[in-house]
Length: 111
Length: 109
Image (cartoon, rainbow over all chains, first blue to last red; front, side, top):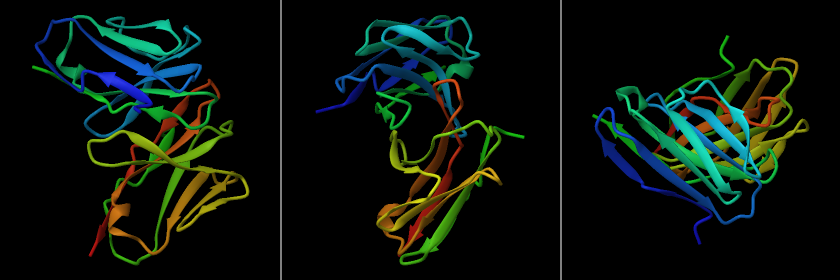
């Protein structure tokens, strides 16, 4: 049983396109997160949602818009993709600010 | 000063060696500290939490030094399977975790 799942695992697209990444967790956690890990392996938080409410919105371009239809799902939509958006995007969930369970990651390549 | 700093390594050690990593942090308000392990092209996974009194789990020992604002991870009797990147993490005081960029460990036969 996959605790935190993401789709797609790989995403190759051209500059200017719009794409979405989906995330689902079956752990019953209240909080979900999106992280970006760049080529230097620096893992940086982008957003967090608690019970469908946006809690954290770090300095992320407006082209990135998270959506949480329910507390088990947190999707990420990216408009007008740029070369600098190429990275691995990880979804994660936690019950309290303790162990965070990460999804397998979505490797985004913008050409 | 960066929020979290780690020596990127790589630390190349023979099997059976003892190796230690440090991680310094700048936010003195941080209360929760963790070590995560990340294998190549995989997601980070929690290795262990770091308590004020220290924490030991088998061959792994984690310590917290609040006065000097660093945490450490000690691995004894290194195994080939310990080869990975080790990320330190702590809370930001805003219901989120911040991560270091990781220390790469390569255990050699």
